[in-house]
Length: 237
Image 1 (cartoon, helix red, strand yellow):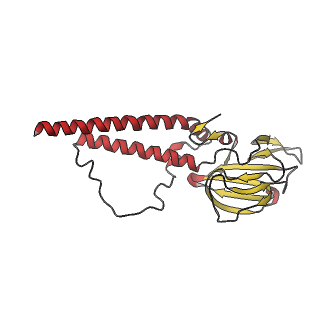
Image 2 (tube, rainbow, N blue to C red):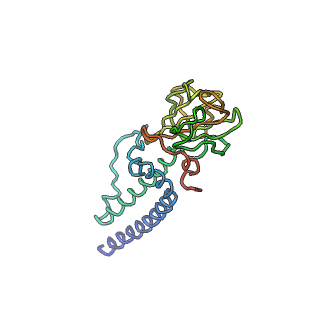
Image 3 (spheres, helix red, strand yellow):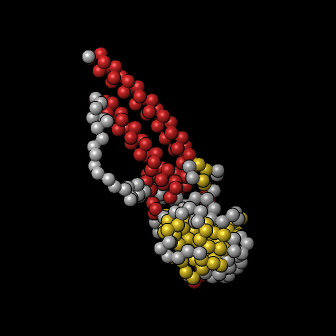
């Protein structure tokens, strides 16, 4: 009957409204957690919206195409509402994926910064020079861990860098680890967050045991400091 059809439509609307409210609350909570991450990315010329376009959400998937008829069974306003809910869920999943791919946290257990990013007095010449990473003082052979998943692009002795590792991450990020005493990975290795990749050392152009750590977005070096202190999904800065 017409009344039954209206009741079913209203039930659909009530359910979608509740789902939309729940999803919207989750999106709001997630965005709240990403506020400081977004701020540090914007400061380095890479807003979250730009990086989300580079997140590979459809990699290594497949299966037959089976049209989703759930929205077709609803009248237009409710079908549109359902599509909006789906879009919000997709956005939330993209935020989580991006956070997982970003180089966040410390690569070693030591946390004393011995040289900051930017202009500094060169330790050998005494002249002003640009420092495109940060130095973290550490005992010799302190384990060094990857700060995001990726692929090792270079792992070799590299002049002033000494024993050196470069890892390429999704969404355009790259990290570099230098002055190592030992390299525990090789070019082409697939790395997960937290994997031990090397040990701190004093190789290359170095005055003592420490880790030189760089983060690049595209080809541009950025200040790693706030990335160090930002956790996935939330910040303690």
